[in-house]
Image 1: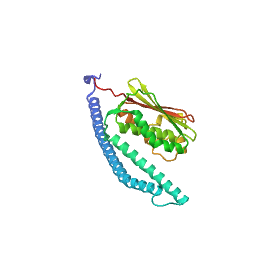
Image 2: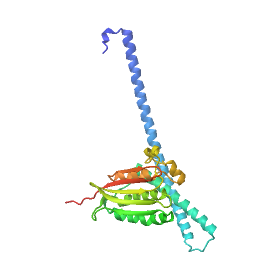
Image 3: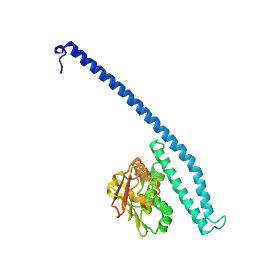
Image 4: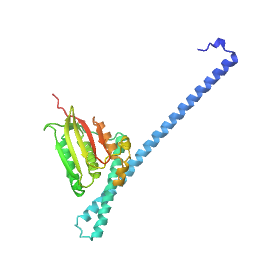
Length: 276
């Protein structure tokens, strides 16, 4: 502690002036930081509005194109040559990928702006998986990937969650497992009890995730290098959305993986309890 009486007047004046300048610099820095934060907030809102408007504007025409291509391929307007049909199917596949990307962008925007509304209630995980399999099994069959479903839950076991959000998570994990599993491989979906939670595990015999990239697997827009080589298209948003969604419903999404030896993605949800 400096004794002011022991300091020469000129030195004391210099110290006080220095402290005053330091205080003024701190005030200016606080003002600059506040302005920078406000600019970042404004930019964030502008980005969110742009994504929302652009995605909504894209989704309607893309959905119309997808429906039209599907209708043409159904044969109800006449037959096509093999080359024409191939071009139509390639166009349909590309359109479906674009629609998926748009939906993922909208999903991220809704999550980050808090506009996702959860309708919590009892969810039958067995029914959810069966519903997803109706969509995924035909695709898996074309790729010669088998799917096994094992339900170890008791008959009355229900998750406390939003059924639509749970279905999106399950569909994302099963589609990923199928997409990154080579022909002749297998995907296993297992439902089980985990204490006060219900557990859903999706295991595949696919390409796995390189160990040095596993820490980034739930980050936005991230795709592992071997995944990019195998499937060139993909938004890198699916696992981010899945993890955020599970956590907002009171659960946890984890994974284990070894490159060339497959992956297991597991998520838990609280068990639904009826009031006594």
